[in-house]
Length: 173
Image (cartoon, rainbow, N blue to C red; front, side):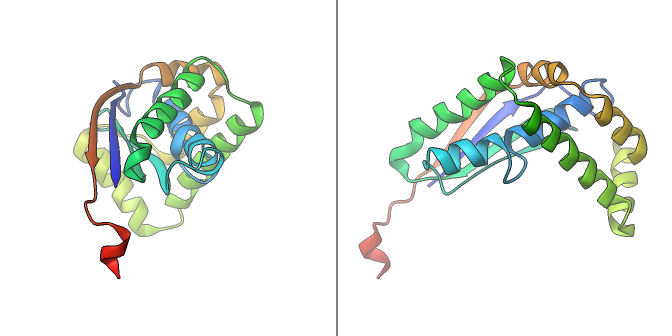
């Protein structure tokens, strides 16, 4: 089964909180060091996958997970719990620093690829939200833990989509 949780972030790339939101997104569900991966997937073991993708031009964030149907409530509650913990300031220095470094690394990789640079500037032009990569890196370097807490507090659950499989394991054979 799949569960997709849609959140409203009330942010866009021109807002001062955008750099903080990027760090929050990384910390919350960006990669294998994120809260969703380490706590929800690995520690609790209630899903096969769990990650968050932020869409700053639309002011949304999508958390997507592959689960067994019986884990629906557990997964939903665990995701909300992780969001609430970050919103409450329960963030270690180590995970905060890792999230910042990952975001900076991803931004630097844009400059290594002509295609990525083209997409960066094209997207910024289309949305009228022009910003240099180095400018955003500088802003991310200035982000503090309390900025991430503030960014997390702007994220609100809006929609939950659940797709449940109907075949049993024996029917696959």
